[in-house]
Every structure is written in C-alpha cells, then in structure tokens.
Length: 156
Image 1 (cartoon, rainbow, N blue to C red):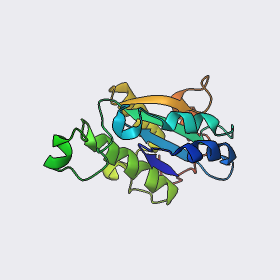
Image 2 (image 1 turned 135 degrees about the vertical axis):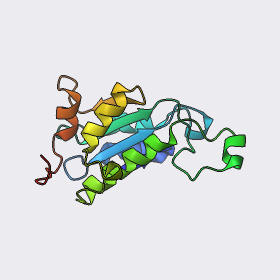
Image 3 (image 1 turned 30 degrees about the horizontal axis):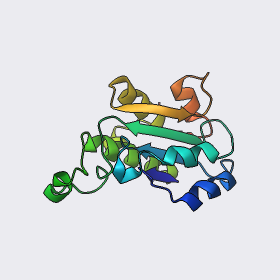
C-alpha cells in the first residue's frame, strides 16, 4: 500500500490497529502538515499500526511540499495553496515504490534502476525527503528500507 499524503477519518485511525505488516508493506509519503491533510493526521493512524517485520512500514515526508503535489499541477490548485515545491520528488518516489511492488525492473526512478531505498537515501541526503519511520532506528536507512523488499537479481 502506498499512501500519498493520506488523510484518515477517525474510524480509519482506529482500524489501523488491525493492519498486518507481515502481509502488506505500508509506505506513507506525506506533505508538510496543513489544513488540507488535517495537520498530518496520518501520523496518528500510522502510530496505531502494530509492529511487523523490519522495513514494512515506511513513513516519509517530502520537505516543502503540499497536499496537492501528487496531482497534475494546475494554476487553480496553486491559487488555493494546494501546491508546494518538489512535485518531481513525489513522481520519483511513487514510480520507485510502484515498480518495486509490481516487480518491474528498470521501470523505477525514470529508468535509473535505483531501488526505493537508494532513492530515499539520495533524496534525504539532498534534504528533499525526511524519513519519519523506516522500521528499526538502529539500522542504516538502506538496511531498514531494504528489509523484506524483493531483491532484483538483474541489479549489479
């Protein structure tokens, strides 16, 4: 499951305690807190998800972004404050996680063949992404994000 600046309802927050990370990986890509995403309320839902295997719950925030950034840009969305910076970061993250989930080698990150974990490490090093949760805090970022991910045998 990939959430793009998810905005949970109160019932969703309560239901998150039944999410099974052993069965399904959960990736949350968030924008900066604002009224559009109920001030980052998804964090409350993610906090209720029971622990699971390392690297199965990934929570990222795209710095300087807004709730509408995953949408096709439009002047009207910008006028109402729904768009922020770094829309291309959203596209790269979504492409990488979807390619991984669908086992599409060579399709993620514009054909650059970087895994989602490598992409997140690159983007966090450039201060475009803040890693809020990546499994076990004592592991390196790449180890935590790679844990439980399918391996791509074509990669060198």
